Length: 154
Length: 154
DNA sequence: ATAGATTATGGGTAGTTGTGGGTAATTTTA
DNA sequence: TAAAATTACCCACAACTACCCATAATCTAT
Image (tube, rainbow over all chains, first blue to last red; front, side, top):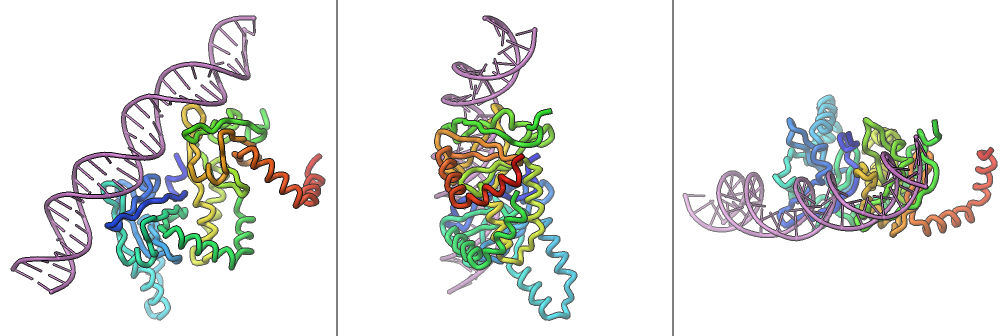
């Protein structure tokens, strides 16, 4: 039994080809899907990147959304923004996925795509953008970052 | 019963071969893995070296990461930086591990690799780098170093 | 001291993975 | 409705990795 049974870890560099396809790391494939669930969910990330969820994880998000009353305007807006960019997907016989132009534009993806395991989901980044976003985050919240490291890293 | 039952101690020098493989000291093997858990986790160290964790230790880090909400930007950045360079691994039939090019570059590993027991994890160093980093640390924080020694050494 | 076992290091091979491109089917557009 | 564009499916190859075996050095036990 490996830890990758349930979680995504590691970083992989792949090329986004002219048809908008990227490889999904072999290590991630049986985490993302199973024998009885071939599809998964792709959507916008909170950062300028693409998020890819296993169906089980997405379903728990969806069930939370169902609990939100549509009477509240902010609830409606939140549900809309969460669901709007999400779509169900499968990989092709080679283990690649086709990223929609919408998402390519949002994540500003070029020829090189960096795929990062984020425990319960996958992120797909433009490498340069990732660097600048992470640097920015750490500059602004450096003390918070250090506090987390102190608390969590063994 | 030996002290090595649960902790990593001591220092060992091995060669990193052309395929990026290093031996894991025989003494460490049953600390790192067990009959029902064959894999372990390799990642970047805080210093310029490689860290190797038993699965149990890594899992407690991971479970803390799962608690962090993705709504906070610094949380996302922290999870990313922690998980990004980590991967699950097993040794081959000879008791070696294959270190990824990423990590070899980060730790500036050459032909000679120094493996050091660090109680709850293993460190893999370029010997020269280790010397200079340790000297540097002690020069800068010498009073702190002495205070720790005073407090801990019996 | 010697034989057997374990450990350290090197290399070969088969299978998997990553990448590109072709063709048919489907959708979109004029 | 027909042409154009897009998408889905398929095949092929190159690169890499995992697995295997071989040998030398070291350690252990009698």
